[in-house]
Length: 123
Image (cartoon, rainbow, N blue to C red; front, side):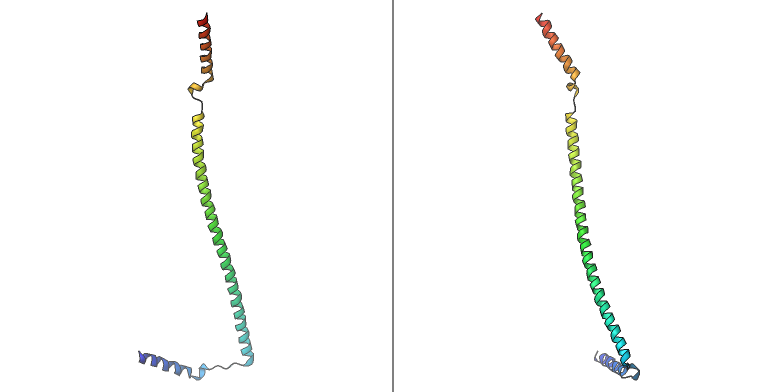
């Protein structure tokens, strides 16, 4: 392992010592490069701010979607409760419907027959 590391170190030093690896820039080139670097830094800061704002918006949308899901669940529960109440009211409505013995004509004839029976019994 030591030999491999020493071999890599010696190869890297030999490449660094080559003449072609050294590049000299003039002052205008250095200024252009520094301006480009500063522009890149500014764009990185701007993009970082944009990403932070987008993360905030995404968090807001996630919280709103959670709220909407909860509202939908509540609506489903409300609809189920209304359906159960409707079934109960239909049963009550069926119980309140007149039966055969709630016929007005039947009660009128029964009353008339009893009055006639009393009148005939008295005579």
